[in-house]
Structures are given as C-alpha cells and as structure tokens.
Amino acid sequence: MKYPRYKYVFAFFDFIIIFFSFHIAEYVTAVYLNKRILVEENVLLTTVTFFAFSVVFILLFQNNYLYRINVFLTRAKHLTAIIKSFLYGILILIIFSFIIKFSLLLSSRVFVLCFFVFALSGITLMRIGFLRPFYMNFTKILHNSNVLIVGGGRPGRLLAEKLIFENFYGVRIIGFADDDVPKGAKIFKELECLGSTSDLEAIVKEKEIDEILIALDNISYENLMRLIDRANHLEKTVKLTSELFNIVPEKIVTDNYSGIPVVDVSPKVNHNLNYYYKRTFDYVASAVGLLILSPVFLVISILVKLSSPGEIFFRQTRIGKDGKPFTFYKFRSMYRNAENIQSREAFMKEFIRNQEKFTETSNKVVDEKLITPVGKFLRKTSLDELPQLYNVLKGDMSLVGPRPCLPYEYESYDEWHKRRHVVMPGCTGVWQVSGRSSVSFKDSVVLDIYYINNMTPWLDLQLILKTFPVMMFGRGAK
Image (cartoon, rainbow, N blue to C red; front, side):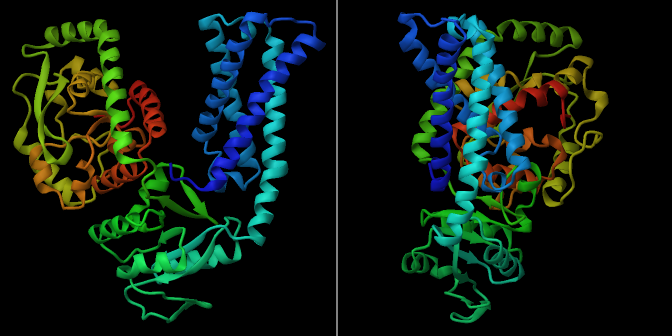
C-alpha cells in the first residue's frame, strides 16, 4: 500500500505496545493478583489471540483516523480518538470472549481492566509524550518528502505559505508547475515555476519529487481528471486541494495541511490484486448473505405479494463496469405499471445537467402515491435492495462501489462522469453512507472517484459497516 513511511512506524509502535500489554496484563493478573487463569495447553492459542486482537486495535486506530497527521499533531483530538478506539476494542474483546468462551478473557474482569490501563497508558505515553514531539522536532531538522505544487495561483501560493511557516508535516517544497507561468518565474518567495503540467514527468525525475500537490480551481473537471491521471502515472503520492473536490472533506475526514483540507487521489493498492480480493470476498459474502437472509427474503416476498398485484421482483436494465448493461434486481415497491418513466427520465437528465440536490422531502423523482405501503418501508430501510446480492453473486455488481445508472442517464453523462464506471458498480458506496440522496449529482460522482482512487479492502469493510446504521435510520433514502 502507498502510505507515508511515518504511518507504518506509528502502526508498528502501536502494535508492539498493545501486544505486550496483553501479556503484561495476563502476567500481573496471574502472579500478583493470584488469578492463575492461563492453563498450559492454551499458551499458543492465547498468543495467537493476543496477536489477532492487536491487529484489530490497529484497524480501529485506522478507523478513528489516528494515522492522519492532522489528528496525530493535536492533543485533544488525538487523545479522544485513542480513548474511543480502546472503548470499541474492549467491547469487541468482551463480546468475542463470550461467543467463543475463551477462558483467559472470560475468567477475569481484572485481566481486561489491567489490559485497558496498561495499553491505554502505553499508547498515550508513546504517541503524545514521545512520538508527537519527536516527529515535530525531527521534521524541523530533516525534511523527508520533496513536494511539487501544481498550480501557481492563489490556492497554490496559500498552500506554499502554510507549509513553509507551519511545517510539521515533513515536507520540503521544491517548486511549482503551472501552464500559465513562464518557466523560471518566481511564484512565492524564492520558489520558482519549474515548468508546465506537460513537464511533470521530467520535473519529478530531475527533482526527485515524492509528493505532488495539485492546487487548482480554475480548471474543468475533465482537465482535472486528466491531470490526476498523469500525476498518478508517475507512481508518487498525489494529493489535491480544490473547490471542485470540496464535497470530499465535507463528507469524509481527510488529511489537512495547516487547516487546508487535502484529498489523497493516488491509488493505494495494486489494481489486479484488489480486483481478485474483491471478487472473492463478494462471492463468499453474497452467498452467505443470501443463505442467512433467506427467511427475510421469504417474509418480504409474501408482504410484497399481498400489498398489491404484480411481480415480487422488479427487474431493470442498468449500466455496469465499462458501460456494459446488466439486469438489476430489487423487491418491487410500487404498484404494477405505476412507474412514470418519461417524467423520471426528464427529471434525471435535468438533475445531471444542473447542481440540484436530492432531499428527503423531494417527490420529484418518485411520486409517493405510486409507492405501496410495504414499499415505503422497504425503500426507507433499503431492504428493497437486498436482491442485489444475487447481482453480486452473478458478478454484475460488487458489495461496494459506485451505484449503477440507467442507460438514459449514462447517455447524458459527460466524459468525466463515466469514470465512475471503470470499476464494478456496488450495492453501497461512499456517497450512500455519507449523505445518500442529499448530495448533488456532481458531488456523488466526485465521491465515487475518491473511492476508486482510495479503494482498499479496509475502506470496503468500513463502508459495509457504515451501511447498516444508514439502513436502520433510513437517512437520505427515498
């Protein structure tokens, strides 16, 4: 994975402290508190369990943004995230011990308390007391990342000023790249324009650039996407600060440099490796899901059939990966022949062209009178979308990815909109869990593109877990 080196260092220290805290807690509980709860034949099992739970805590730290430098460099936010991670971790630990009846964890609440005290104290002392000041002082002495800013306008100059005067991020600005500024011209203080965007490859190679920061607002989405592609082709970390991507930091916690949000737009894992992982996970998870949820399918099928005459399942042609059509399945939520295709098509084409947002009170897309009583509940909870597990099993969709669109919507897309179809469409995604229908079409595409560039197994798992409360509370559903 393409992450800054400091993140691996932090994760390593976190893992060591948590892993040994488990062993110290077991030792203290047994020797000093006379609770001999570890039997000889369980030593290997206990060590493996400690190792596995240490990994779980690292994932919780990642989920609570403890490896984002803007969180790491603060005290209050940093400590809050640490405590939150440990509370979730202890809860998972207790639930797991009851499920598998693991004697070490079940036998003594004192053991869990000891672990909590030792691990929380160790992590807090190491991170806030040692690593944080070391990192802040170390970066003042030795810059470990050469940065090229693409864009010599106001956003680029502001970013340069922040990084020069408030630099705790381990970066050294080498210069700028800009199409509208002559090569060699001064842009900010002594920093010069090193060339145009067409010279990126040469600049990166000659100046040994580690990170490319794109700071452009006066640019079209299509040209911005081409620029991001060109930068990612150089296999360097690529980050973006632009009004065109403002929706991402509004909906998702991202890195920031001295208060300026920056969006990471560089791929994190090998594309082919991630594809095989996703397909394997999708196949297993959808098969298990269909099996476990079969009673739910039966109940919903009966309710749909009793609610009004018509088919149980609603079938529709949607556009999938690389613009290829497939048959999309949902539970029927409307009266038979009630869908007003022409009015919906007209609205969606207008919606794609403009910046209007869907809202929870909007009835422009679907006339409420056409929805059955059962259908209203299914739509609100997204239970009408459960049959898409069959699409996942068939290989038409993934559990996580951009939503598949209708053919007439695809025909109305600009070229940059179609980038959301370079991967397999999904049952859930970034914009569904961070706003669902309360975002504009443009913003939904931007969020999908963010997902595509940041697609990892861990991000997929996070989005799947966040989908459940969205379904339960029906936020943004229509």
